[in-house]
Image 1 (cartoon, rainbow, N blue to C red):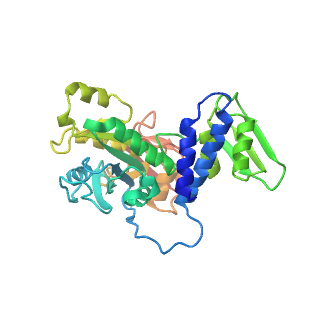
Image 2 (cartoon, rainbow, N blue to C red; image 1 turned 60 degrees about the vertical axis):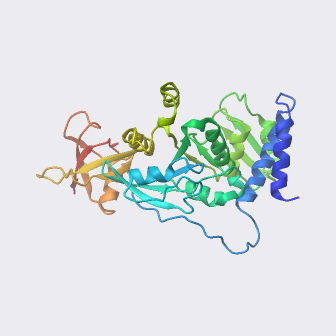
Image 3 (cartoon, helix red, strand yellow; image 1 turned 135 degrees about the vertical axis):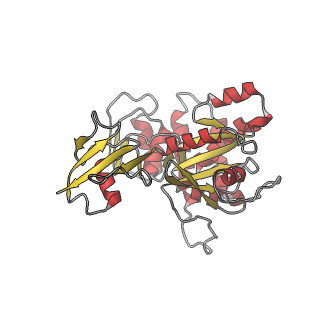
Length: 364
């Protein structure tokens, strides 16, 4: 029996098992086995018959955004509209057969946008070059999921399930669980709060399934058994996702209003160029980018060329971007902007920078 058959067998078993207190351990074990087989499917052991041709492109710009969706939902049209790159668009499915990169210039930042071929059901098992598409998506900073507004609900569920099965968790935080394998001493289990979704017996069963008999486990939040399996694997990618509903010119205004109010959702029409400016605003927000300007002593700030950094960056990060030796010679900084109480304010290396701040660095 191959891995695909084993996965199908376990999925059938899970679907026909009733969920109640008596079966929770059995279901937890089945899910652990399922994760194990899926991991083997993604990373085959032994000698492979030569590598297949991947289509990852070189990372460039300040951030990377991957366009994922079913065939013919308007991914190539969006790329051609937002960037100067022309991706072939046609009225038939699978027009795009490889990864086509484009660059969006927004707020002084260069954001790389990747137009990936359409995903079909079963992509996680390798159907329709699905594995290569998903491998490229794992390297992105943000996933933009393109959906057809006329059949969006089923598309969203199928795509999320495909990405979940290969270890991409959308709009989720990493579980706050400490896990460390040891050489001996058995399994040490602790939690800092009462657990309602998982317990010590479940954790031990899952660890035994993975042939782990010596480990230290500490739950710092109430997590499920699935989230604990994700922590054991350690190869899960947690990334933000923006759901973009295209072809809104084909549905009613009430339906558009309902979709637009859903979390992490943007409604657009690529053909009629509707709401594309708001889409770019949301991409900037989800990428958590900030722009910081520099200023020389006695001169006006350089508003032409800002530094693009991540939200939560400090004056130390700004120094590293300018030059790696600047931190050693840093005496203090002067900042104008929303991150200080008064302008200019004298700051140290650990001062948090805000969007559109101006900084002047004084060396020793």
